[in-house]
Image (cartoon, rainbow, N blue to C red; front, side, top):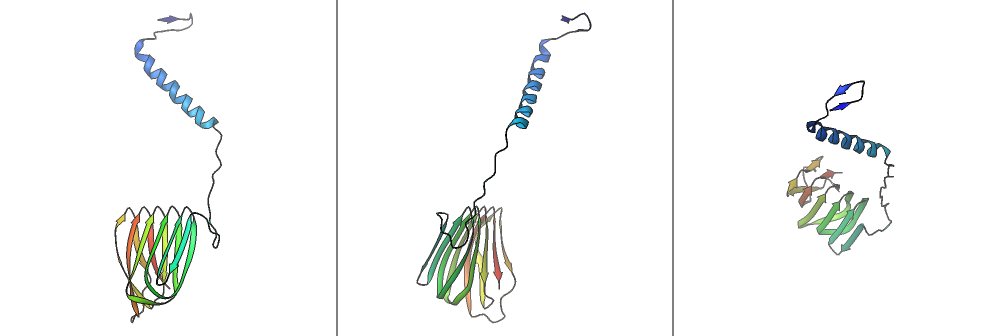
Length: 169
């Protein structure tokens, strides 16, 4: 019992825990408001500038490219495309197949996207057939191929927390 000659109130053990929790909560709020804000850093890999987060290799009738933590546009130029592999994680990759002259009969692309976005630009003269796994993600096809196509590209699209978009151009 506390008596300060102005006001009489009882301070018991049942109030100790709520008062301590209230003081702890107030101190957390004050610390959050007083903490200096950190500057945010963004990483951008401009086209043509090679960094460790980008990779592209064309070997005969096959290509491989990947991008991590950046935005990248890759133009694939080859007379015959037999297979390819593209991957993006925590970034954005645009794969442009408009300069591919011809695709092989069993042309297969392996596309992988993790926490990012991939766009594959395909000429309308080729048909794209997609299959694969999506986990909290999506694979979409925008546009339509020509009625009479000259080849088929089989895309094995694996996507987690992102989007793979096939766009006819």
